[in-house]
Image (cartoon, rainbow, N blue to C red; front, top):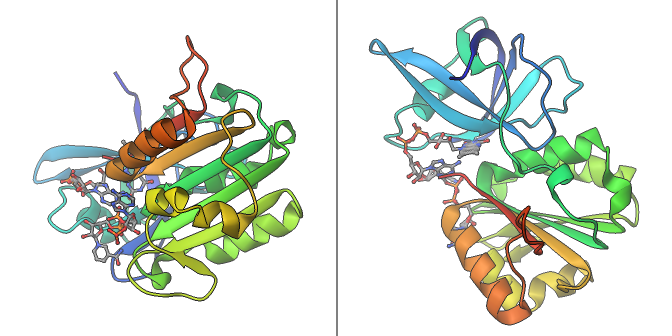
Length: 248
Ligand SMILES: Cc1cc2nc3c(=O)[nH]c(=O)nc-3n(C[C@H](O)[C@H](O)[C@H](O)COP(=O)(O)OP(=O)(O)OC[C@H]3O[C@@H](n4cnc5c(N)ncnc54)[C@H](O)[C@@H]3O)c2cc1C
Ligand SMILES: NC(=O)c1ccc[n+]([C@@H]2O[C@H](COP(=O)([O-])OP(=O)(O)OC[C@H]3O[C@@H](n4cnc5c(N)ncnc54)[C@H](OP(=O)(O)O)[C@@H]3O)[C@@H](O)[C@H]2O)c1
C-alpha cells in the first residue's frame, strides 16, 4: 500500500488553456530521475489518484509536474484548478522503471515523447547523471500545435550544456512551424525525415529508443521499429533496444 503525504501547491503555471505545470512542496522520499509519483485529491468524498512524472531533478526541493487537462477527466480538471497554498496528496515513494539505470549502454540514445510525456526526459537531462554512457542523445517532443511546446526554452538551455552531444527536435502535427518537423513520430521515422533532421541513425546495433506518452504512438512506433529495423523491447531477462512508458 502506498504511503501518502500532504504537499502544498506553490504555483500553478498556465502554459495554454489546457497545459499547466504544478509546482509543489512535499516531504517525499528520494526518487530516481524518470520516475513518477501519484497525486490525489478528495473529490466529493472520494480520493481520486493518478500517476504523474517528475519534471524536476531528485536534488530540487520544489517538485514539478507537467499536465494536460483531459476534458471530462476525473482528476486533471481539478488539478488544473489548484491555487497556491492548496493541499495535495502525493505518494511518499516514487515508482517506475523508465530510468537510465534500466537501459543498456549504447552510442545513440533516442528520447521520443508526445504531449506531457516530455517530463521524465527533462528530469533525467536536467539531473545530468549517467549521461557519459551515451555518445549522443536525441530529445524529440511531438505536440499538436506549436504553442504546446511549453518546455522548448528549457530544452534549448539543456542542449547548450551538452554541445555536440544533445540534439533537440520538435514535431508539430496540426500546423506548420518553423524549426519543427510536421507530422507524427512513426511516419517521420518511416520516411527517414526525423533521422535526416537530426543527422543520426536509429540503428539497432548502436541505438536505444525510449518512447513515452500516447499509447498508440508507443505501439505504432514499436511496431515500426520491429518491422523496419528489427528492434525489440528491452527486458531485464532479454536485452533489446526499446524502452517505453505509456501514459494511459
Ligand atoms: C506512468 C504514468 C505517468 C504519467 N505522467 C503524466 C504526466 O506527467 N502528465 C500528465 O498530464 N499525465 C500523466 N499521466 C496520465 C495521468 O495519470 C492521467 O491519466 C491523466 O491526468 C488523466 O486523468 P483524468 O482523471 O483527468 O482522466 P480520466 O478520467 O482517467 O481519463 C483518462 C483518459 O484521458 C486521456 N489521457 C490521459 N492522460 C493523458 C495525457 N497525459 N495526455 C493526453 N491524454 C491523456 C486518455 O484518453 C485516457 O483514456 C501519466 C500516466 C502514467 C501511467
Ligand atoms: N493539445 C491541445 O492543444 C489540447 C487542447 C485542448 C484539449 N486537449 C486535450 O488534451 C488531451 C491530450 O492532448 P495532447 O495534445 O496533450 O496529447 P495527444 O493527443 O497524445 O497528442 C500529442 C501528439 O501525439 C500525436 N499522436 C497522437 N496519436 C498518435 C499516434 N498513434 N502515433 C503517433 N503520434 C500520435 C498527436 O498527433 P495528432 O495531432 O496527429 O493526433 C500530437 O502530435 C486530449 O484529451 C485533448 O482533447 C488538448
